[in-house]
Length: 281
Image 1 (tube, rainbow, N blue to C red):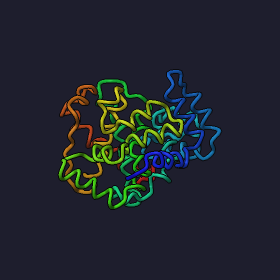
Image 2 (image 1 turned 180 degrees about the vertical axis):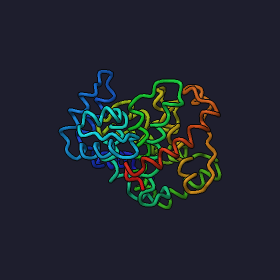
Image 3 (image 1 turned 135 degrees about the vertical axis):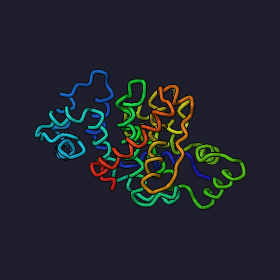
Image 4 (image 1 turned 45 degrees about the horizontal axis):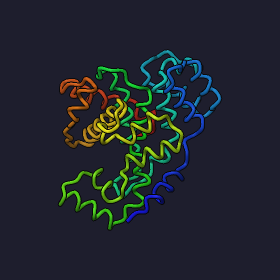
């Protein structure tokens, strides 16, 4: 079986996010965050400045009036989208990788992550509560643990997990926990913690499959965005995916069957618009 310490050691060896992105995540998650502070931080990162101005002036931004400064771009896009763009820029090389143990070809994990981030952008219009700005980062990185977990899932262990599914009727998360003493959500949380991302991002990633244990709204939202992302991907591929959300989560988020049904097609349409911004297609 897998040595848990070695698994965690591998997680800690993943290339970190750029320091400016980590600082931006901390800043956006602070109650004292101001647009001027965000713009000043980005202005010292030339690569991120170029990406931000390009995104703010793209068709996906919904405005025909061009912007030429970081301050204007941050004002147009908002801190949440700016953070999502920064994290996406740093995380994309990692999330583009193949993860055969999870049946993910090159780029598949990245596309799912972008779909979840888009769902996080869409959710505030439907949830009856304030959506924390860290939600976008947690949604984008919710499956980062699979990158490391997949390296250790040998054919033998995958066989054990498959039997746990078929014989014991365990879900993926339960089977991972039973056989490996950790599941990919917990491992992803450890990675986010090692990257010095805000505590709420760590929580959202850790509990994106079991939000009742997270005791924070960001866990409910990351769980929701993961499920909506699966629905978006299925629709684009012509497959059917029945969106089943925990009743406890829908109640806590103030969602109804009607609002859920409305959220999904709007998120799917938005994904088509913004996927090029994140280089998802």
